[in-house]
Image (cartoon, rainbow, N blue to C red; front, side):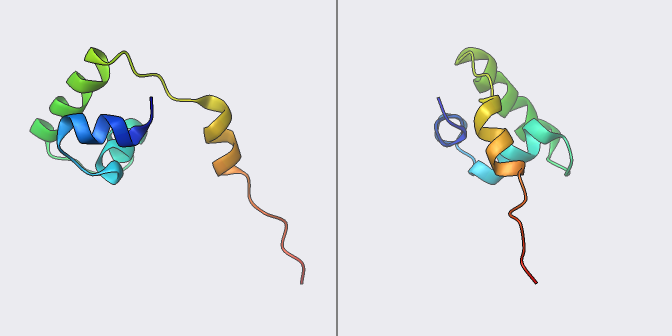
Length: 62
């Protein structure tokens, strides 16, 4: 299951789902509740390995 699947089921963008999961940016309470309900219904859990890959900064040569 991917964020894209949660977004489609909740009727929101993948960015909105990401913001709800990270809790870093403001999301309207009713939208946040809707996304969290879908996450719970679909038994979603983030893929930690994929998240770790995204967080790694590439080495810059300079």
